[in-house]
Length: 182
Ligand SMILES: [Fe+2]
Image (spheres, rainbow, N blue to C red):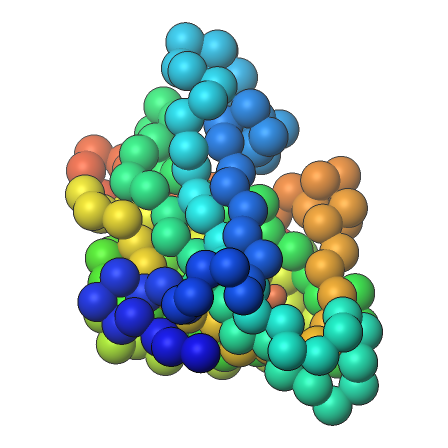
């Protein structure tokens, strides 16, 4: 396998699982539904690659993945990933930024939300029991690499039901985490 660090992509693409998320699939995560209706639902928000050298659920294995989040926003809310807890809550993860600018948005089970700025070279440890999503706050694609345990699993449902307790918005041109925060 090869890591194309310029593009932040795994090669060959035929050996990885790839998925594309459009506004249509992500509509529930954005605050301003009216603004969303004025946008093309086919707009690509992000693409994911996952290299899974062992079966999903294997204890002791690791997966390697990439995510490319396109620049854009729905009203003042930046394009972002769906976000998830790990199904096994004690499983952790690394993210590192290849290119672009963004934010890693984190929320613990008490619904306290905080963020870490992302830029080329930033390295992020996602602790146990912490939901995570990334947003692109820049003008070019945000490219990141992730490594996580093969038995972590994804719990999207908790986020689908309750979301995060804060949203990453552009307020007077500044990146702002807005919400209850807890
Ligand atoms: Fe994760």
